[in-house]
Length: 42
Image (cartoon, rainbow, N blue to C red):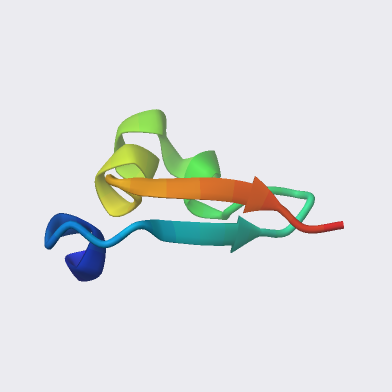
């Protein structure tokens, strides 16, 4: 999150089931992963 805030291009690799923070709420997930791109690993 800090690197993305500083302008780095960050790619987050998530499992096929998705990140656990997605299950809490959309706002929570968005706040933790702002500025990141996500891809799913298989």
